[in-house]
Length: 239
Image 1 (cartoon, rainbow, N blue to C red):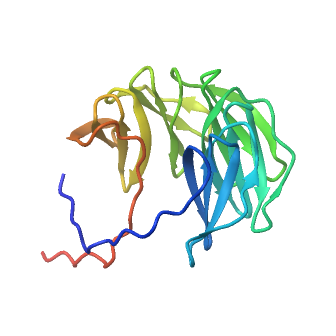
Image 2 (cartoon, rainbow, N blue to C red):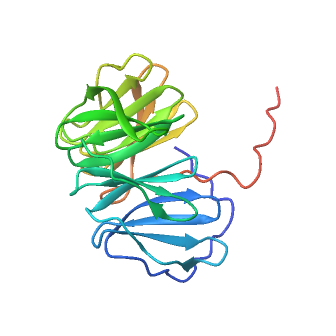
């Protein structure tokens, strides 16, 4: 798969955060960093690359998602989801009822939460911060989650698979086998990229037909994925 490097990127100075940073989320000019090891969230001003006062959330924060003016924090060891109002960084009441929540993604005003302890997805109405509807079963250890339109895509770490979930009716499709220990997902157009930490590969899954169309060898233990928008629009097609 061709990769085009459009410019040289200069590496800036490291920014000190908390212990064992595990997740990132951006809201406006602020980057939020989940520090799993000491139960805090570090806000970073992206204009100055300055870290602000850590927000104590406890419980092993492992995933972040921003919905409107609220940052949601999955606390793995606490089995809760914590809403944090931004930019005031005020912590709201914890949402309970989860079992080792490990991944978050939002579609509209609904936050979806995967639970490693029960192998399920639960839905949170972010207008009321309550769990709604029935749980959706997943494969063993659903550790990564993303969405495309009204469809969720969830990995199963132990089953080496990705499953599409129709959020309109809560039904799951047939699991698609990818590489070993899928750990991260990223949607680019109609392609779902899957980082396989156990096989050191990327699987390219066509979301139109749910078939893996290519596998790319990468470095050791790919753990996360991010999409960088092109600096310039692509040239027009000439027919």
